[in-house]
Image (tube, rainbow, N blue to C red; front, side, top):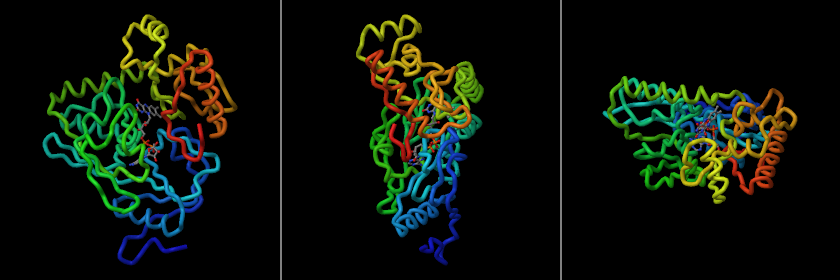
Length: 321
Ligand SMILES: Cc1cc2nc3c(=O)[nH]c(=O)nc-3n(C[C@H](O)[C@H](O)[C@H](O)COP(=O)(O)OP(=O)(O)OC[C@H]3O[C@@H](n4cnc5c(N)ncnc54)[C@H](O)[C@@H]3O)c2cc1C
């Protein structure tokens, strides 16, 4: 095995054949051939060099809250991003990719800065959130970013991109489309706010999430994205029933799954949550294969019954949903 730890660099923490399930909110996934925790950008570069020298693919793990990993695991180098420094200058907050998103929300509240309130309670890291443009209640992380720093896995150099170069969209970004760009940090432009008001907004967000029971264990949150629907009758039915206007013709996937009568549907240990129909949950012993079978069944039934095609929000690793 090539030595990833040259005498000029601090030793890398490399482990072999490590089960990945404990690093995911689904608690599903077989072993990685190698697992490396990157505490600094330099360690990330070393880990990528190691993968290259071993002729192995790499993958990035953030908080694992949006990942469905194959039962066979990952036959390469899994790299956990653990760099987690945050600094502030006025309303500009510089944060590293491994920082916990919810902790960041609370930190910015303590600083009396406004802009992240609607993201309170979303699990995972800042890097994972930037890559998927995580959001809730009409806000998304891309809205408050000034720049994103990303390490190009091909050149091992860091590029800094302005927000308008990041192609943010609904649960989408340039980093999602190009896995060779690893988010290492973000500069957020937040507004000064009244600390009590900002804190109250965060409390409201958390209460709304609690009321909808969005903190469901052993899931990856919403499994499917909310699709754009062109069936006017279906849109009207949703709006009449829910008493809300749908945004950009997107209907919540959970409502569609419910309409198709799929709440509580099960395949082995994988189930449609009884609390939230767009949450597919591991009831204890689900395999990735069962989760994929359940997801395919849900997608097929929704398509057959309602004519709407669902696309997964969850990031698959070694599985095809
Ligand atoms: C209970 C629950 C509730 C949730 N609610 C919401 C919600 O309200 N809104 C929402 O948007 N999401 C929600 N999610 C999904 C999830 O929290 C987000 O997608 C989160 O941003 C994922 O971040 P992560 O660090 O856990 O990413 P991971 O799950 O670790 O990774 C997801 C993908 O991003 C890649 N990745 C991770 N870090 C980086 C990086 N630094 N650079 C490049 N690629 C990277 C990984 O390789 C993988 O492909 C929820 C999940 C759970 C379990």
